[in-house]
Image (cartoon, rainbow, N blue to C red; front, side, top):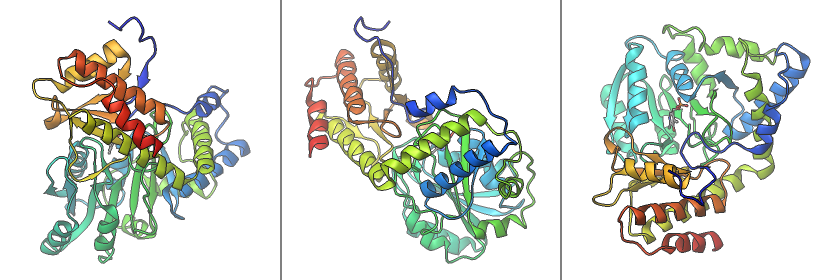
Length: 384
Ligand SMILES: *Cc1c(COP(=O)(O)O)cnc(C)c1O
């Protein structure tokens, strides 16, 4: 049961994340028809905003699905049965790339990365050379299950040397958080979802496709129907979607994209970086360990649970008694970590709230700490 004073709920999970009030207000309006000039105009703004967000001139398509639908489309549109795909597997979402490949008959070559680490680009280069005919490299820009990033800029330089290999990036907790330069870095296919860095409810996936990737799409023979991106691309010429779009989410997306432009990408990346540094400082000040040993993600902080305390119990206590939702560990990290998100519509005092709840919750569970030590460390970073 919730403590007497904890009457509010705070969503601090790495998806879904808090929704921007401007989007909430817009999404409550009556639905407009999608084959109308009013819709076309609105969709044009969404498309422009997405190109700004993804840092590309290539078309970015919007699908009514969660992020995983976009990941499926990123495989099924560009590869062939029996193709080799090199998968960077350093967490649950790396595993997902492998599973999608295998379910389409693509031969996934797993490059295992220890959970919490970032892939060393040289390992990718060597494996590509050894295998010879790898048609795609699949990776997470930010591996949400561990809180670590993979260096997609360096991978772009490697894969760019192969005219018939695509770099396919799951940017679901990186777009709108980290400086991901889709065009400049040669990221051929980049996927994101609405409920992570975009300050939106779940339900949309967005996918950018390079010229090189459209070329590969010509030879692709994998089965697909709804997620056929060539159909979406054709509709774009009329400023339309192939099928009925999620109209209400689309108008919300227009609002958050306008907010993103107003704040500016540089400021957004800086904000996430500062919040992430504050979170990490708080964790260390409380004598806790960070789970990510590689490049840390600025979207979330994964914390190792102290000896003798179960990570799932931390999540239960914080949500149940304090009204603060953080996420537990997944798969092999289950019980061992908990994850605090600071991506999207999150400001300094949301983070302070989360740190404070962690302090109170852990103390209550028997972990010895000085109340306020984490909050103070976070405040010092936020003020510097
Ligand atoms: C959340 C997430 C996904 C899955 O997205 P869904 O919207 O749940 O389908 C995939 N990859 C990463 C890195 C994520 O954070």
